[in-house]
Length: 71
Image (cartoon, rainbow, N blue to C red; front, side, top):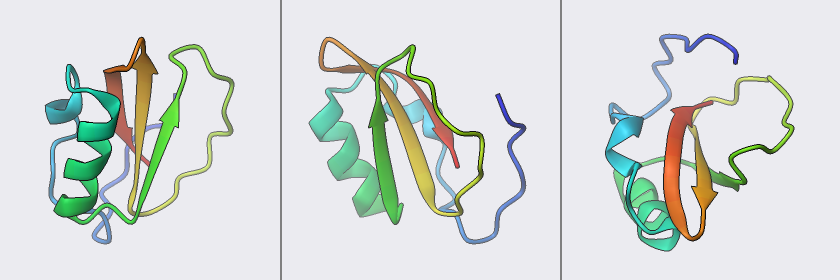
């Protein structure tokens, strides 16, 4: 996993707060907090490691967020 960077363009929001929420509820709340992009992924998805400012990644299993991180 790529290291998190101090990104002034990302909302001042703790990604861990989305873990345990239903995916659609987590996405709605994230957008309300100012995340410009919310990406939903399977927990074992193969993804690129580029950091995109303002993006929140949600790993979802059975409709529930199991992990969340910036970038």
